[in-house]
Image (tube, rainbow, N blue to C red; front, side, top):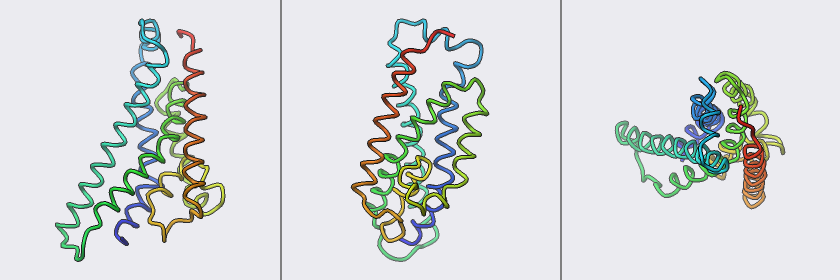
Length: 193
């Protein structure tokens, strides 16, 4: 489990939140270039379906990224000849928890990416708000800060500052619901630009 702790300490606070920002910006990039929003929003498709489609696309990208991480983690373990049993279900649980904890962050970055006209703004927001992750994670705010939630969820229990997993996942779920409602409502009201 010590090896997974090292993966979680690198992937959770730095790589995953920045990748979420990149994925959300990529999903919206084609619409920002050449009046794509006008064309997309003029189609006879509900605005809520467009928003949810973009959200689910980013979710799929995160799932694929996490599955690649799992395969590489196991593969490098075998290549390096790591001794001992592999707690595959425990590690798979950490992967699933990391994906679930990314959901509010995906919504937040998607909302920013839809509003920002350039690729650089959501990426800059993602990087700047990811930098204080380690510091914020050790405070009570860490459980509600969307950029630290993936790290906290992916960390083994003995390494995580989470006192109550029930409270943590209630906060993640609550943040997700609030951001989903806000994102849908603001996107549905969006005018054709």
